[in-house]
Image 1 (tube, rainbow, N blue to C red):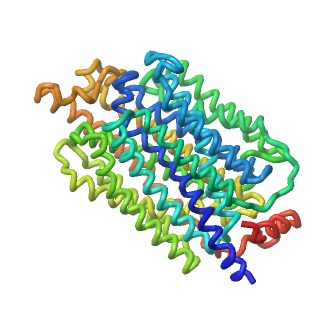
Image 2: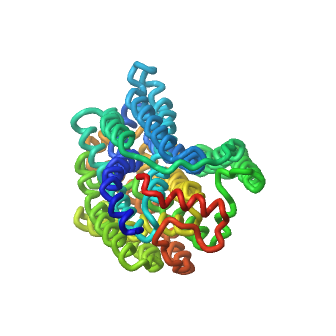
Image 3: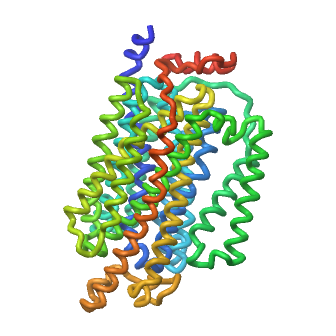
Length: 528
């Protein structure tokens, strides 16, 4: 009977999956699409010291919103919540494209507007990412989920490279604003398709949103990101501003833990972390996001400055990374579906990803494009082993009724890792550059590069240009060294994950309550 239900539902699942893949493509695309357009944005609105905030605002918005979207989906139904997230994302995209254009204010306020609208766009993007993963969890049992999540991981790989490529092409041939406007027609197609095809079981629960917990979590995470962004750059680490942010983060997160312990419907159920696999894979996801998003944002900067690539070419130069990640994601997803085994993949992925980042520390002014491409293939292969397995293990560790919260938590830890990685690596980059002869050439100190226009590098005298490019290459390779230190812990943590059999239907684990059994019965219904 189970096989029959799956056979009937499969054509509809494929159609829904197409709409979900578009939504996931948009959310992941905007993690990366700005990277190749940043030099133009910085040249129009401000200095190089602001560039990480355009990325950080999006990732921060995604981070603080994912647990909220996941829990709202559990309470109100994933379909309506997910479609709302699509609308928020598209509104943020339109506003980002209009930032500083004169419609909402002149170029003087353009950077502030863009950062604010990127945060709004990130709020919607968080709902897209967690919604896609949770909806697949509703439609497909864990044993079959590896195949579909492998496809989603492949889309994420394509987006990571298509983002810089599309952003570069648009920047070179149109305007950086179209890097945001391009979301509107694609998002519109996904919205219409999902409105017509997405049908999910309705879960009836008592609607008690933990707004206090959500607010405390947002304050705590924002304070941490601000602290890592400004520490050693805008302010000294021992300054009252940084110490105040540290105290605010500590108080907010401790209060959040107390609130979640007593909340009827906690945004982030702390009981999930009593499960060893869930706790371990959450830490792995955090480190994966930290190294992946934090370090990868510096590859286009290296390619456009040190290697002299155009914005479009820098996107093409990332294709080896996408190829490694795409192929391995698809192969691993099918292997998990066929065998039901998954423990080895995050271990191998952690080792290979660390090796790839270690190779990227060798980047300098003399590194050829072929060499850097080989390094990126290794990094992509390591990421391919990890991308879908982290979510699969998290979802297989919880009952169906907590699927949205688990998906949101897993996405949250990857996103908060990315937020902290981008801000911390940005501060490390600025400090390293500021202490070099290249930084001194542009004012030195924490404000190094504040007036640097990357498009003017080629106009510098040869000797001065060599100094600047050498300083940039050294600062970027220094960032990769720090990334290696974090990814070394990934295989060590993954080693302690237990191989729990993947369920062949969406049923709760042994010992489930009557409420969990009822939730599973709904999930089994072929109401796709």
